[in-house]
Image 1 (cartoon, each protein chain N blue to C red):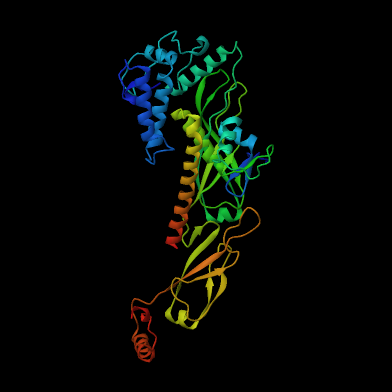
Image 2: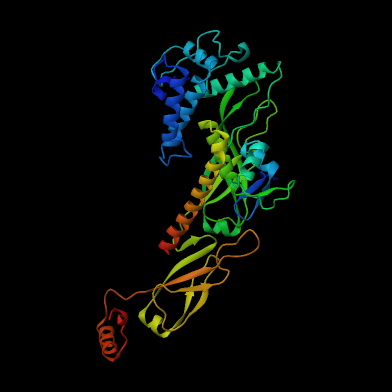
Length: 310
Length: 105
C-alpha cells in the first residue's frame, strides 16, 4: 500500500487544529471541487483533498492515521501490527487496497459497532462515465460494453479494487450530451445497503459529413455556380442512404434546405430533420472554355450582389 | 444467450421521476426536497401534494447539490440558492453548446 501524506495534501502542519484543517480544506475545495472548478485536473486533486479531509477531520481516524507514522508520499508501507484502524481487529492483506479504502472501511466498521453490533446499511458509491457513440448507433440504438474499476468487499470482508464490466442497451432517441442513469450499476452497497448508480454521459463521435444540433443533422452541400443559378436535382447522402434533393434556382450560400425526418429519431417516435446548408463553390482553376463563358456571362449579367452597399 | 440489461433512466426534459425516486437518486431527504419546492428552486410538473413528479434532468443538479452540501457543509438556507444557480449554469451550458454547434454549421 502506498503512503499518502494527508497533512501535506491539505497544506497544514501535523499539529494543526481541527479548525485549521477545516479552513485549509474549504479553501482547496473552492479551488478544485469538480462541481465548482472547470480545471480538468481538479477532479483528481479534489479526490485527494476530500480523502485527506475525511480522515483528518475525524479525531479517531486522525489518531489512527497518525499511528501509521510518517513516510515519504508514494512509498510502499504496511500498517503496524494491531493497528487500531483494522476493522474489528481483522487483519487485512493490504494488497490491492489503498489508504482511502482502508479509512472508508474503518468508518463502516465503526458505524456498525455504534449500533449495538448491527451493521448500518451503507449505499454503494455512484460513478460517472463518459462514452462516445456513432451517429449510426444513435439512429438504430446500440449495446455498449462498459468497464470501470470499483472498490468492493470480497467474501473475506477485504476491500479490493475490482473491474466492473457489463453490457448496457442504449435505445434509439439519444442525442449529443444525453445523460442517462443505469440503476444499481455503481459500487456495491454494504450491509444490505442499495448498490450505487452509474451516470452515463453520452456524446457523439464527430461524423465526417453531418453535424448535430439536438436531433437535427446539418450537412454542408457544395453547389456549382450553375447549379445554384439554374437549380438542380442533387443526390444527397443521409444516414439511411442517399436521397434526391430538388434545389430551386437562384439559391444562395448559407440557405438551408430541409429534408424532413432524415435526422435522428427521438424517444417518442418523432424524428429530427436533415438540413442541407448551401455552399457555392467555384473551381480553383478554369479551363480556357470555362473562362471564356464566365467572361461572356459577366458582360451580359446586370446582377449586383452589393447593391445594399450604396 | 440472455443478457440482463440494467434499468435505464433518461435524464432530460422529456422524462420524469417521482419524489421517492428523486430522494433515492439524490441522497437528499424528503424534507430537504420539500424545502426546495416550497422555496421555488425545484418545480414539480404537478403540484398535487402526494404526486410530485419532476423532469428527470433535475436529477443531475439535485445530486450535485447533495454533493456540494456534503463537501462544503452547506447550510439549509444556502440550499435553494445553490440549486437555482446550478440550474442556471446547466441551461447556459446547453445554450452555449447549441450556439457552438449552430455556428459550426
